[in-house]
Length: 395
Image (cartoon, rainbow, N blue to C red; front, side, top):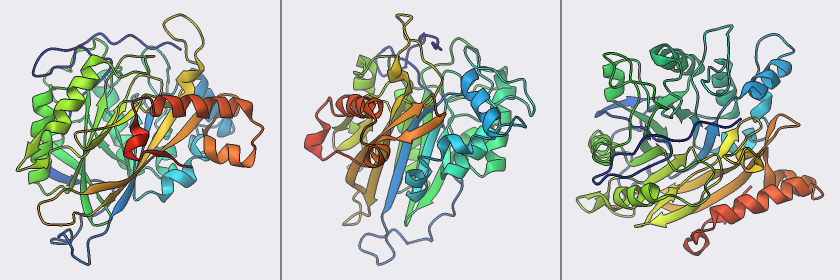
């Protein structure tokens, strides 16, 4: 089903327009999911320094048909999202750190649950994500305030129960000030998340911190605060871009360049940008020595209708980004991405499953529909020349 057009602008140093993005603030480190590495464990050249692999994926957007599928997978009693992610679970669970993007908020236990245009998803989505191997998700999107402060609270409570970290929305001012961090290898990894707007829904009264709205200066300040709090790697999730457009828009290009150029003491403030919102796979690109994923497309969604009122299969295409980080070679240097990969995926509406396309085609080369989707995703992902910087398709 068609989503609302982006209506708000991302605030840059100079004004610009965007498709869907939000923000996160804070300086005090918070551990979510895994314990922090021991003090001194990340010293360059130290025997204790260990690299890590990161997996990140696109929008989880449960439309009515997706909710019905989860109910059927539960045998009609409740909702079970674990089967939906079962075919990508081997890929996700192998990563040292796996992050998703939770586009919607959760309704109360037992419902009612709704799809487009104001989403209230079953809280069992969180258990499905955890079972698949995710450690946490960005929660800042244009749908974060679809059910006001109650929706934010229920969503983050469900994440807490499932043991998932979250970044981008908050229940209290104190929670909004914290930096969400994870341990991966011997690194302390900070995750920040932002959205361009909230589809016209106002921030709850007295809660200006409920969801992080994208502003360049704020993103940089938050990244520097995370670094000051001990983060070795800073990941930034941005809900941005123009829906149904493969090419990154002017705001994405400008903000991406600015964030990747920002440095403190010669060290980049941001180590990787992970984009969502456009509903179609967008390119990966290395800018100022830092990888940007402009958009990973949808991981979970129902039948998608584009702005021409046509069913658009691209709305069920996505990419999973997989990046291998190595410790710095010398003191004061950054953690380096030594391998960059993308894995094409498809939400198979007939099967009700998210499919790892290269893996599925290795088992059944005769699936022309899967081959068509894989090729379209590959073309989009590589369309800004990322192959020359070493990006490869994985499985």
